Image (cartoon, rainbow, N blue to C red; front, top):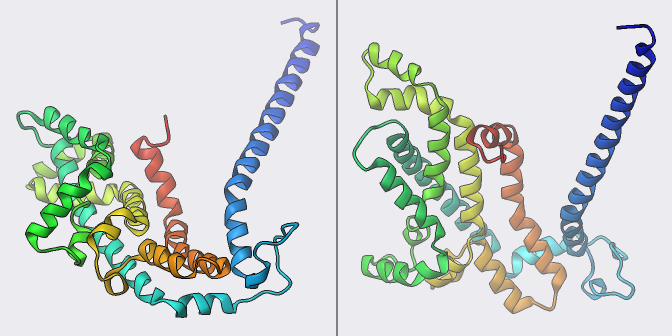
Length: 292
């Protein structure tokens, strides 16, 4: 390389560095815009929950009211048994998440590690159930719940949707990435399939289990159609979305109270995501949900 080529290399390196800086700035600006688009409705909801009732719809619209009314939250919780709705929703979501984790981890291990005739065909048929919308299943599912005597019960809220193919698919993809040599070493030491599953696969699958737990908990917590159909005694066994709908029907004109109740209903899922955010990032990357 001659000395005359050095200025050209310096110019090209500066141009490449400048190009990387420009791409980084543009990407960060786009991320900020996307984050703002998602954050604006939430900020407006929180601001509306703190406004007086006569200042929710003002012209021109204002983000903040003339005073901050924290009393809206106590009024919203006192108008209906909203604490009962939150307790019911948490219990149903927690129990449903536990059932999903147990059932999905066992079935995923069977599809990923055990060798049996028709395994791939059964797994493909199992995945095809994801294409069936919930609206198609609610009628036969309700007939089954009535035959079992589970209508208007917590069992009807937990078990019908606890055996879906999504959790099995998610954990199976993770189990396939675990080197088989780890299990073979355990088998040499005398461990069987059960011990290798409990002592090797499950500890390694904690990030994937965290992703599945978060998705499942949020799904149960936000479920509206099925609880609305199967629960008759809403004030006793209703969950948060059904309670919000009842609140809105009776007190729809006071949007500040409706927004206050909505903010309270979002708190558990927000706390869950904050607690599991590290595992969620690792689990999404490990299971292939990141789009790689």
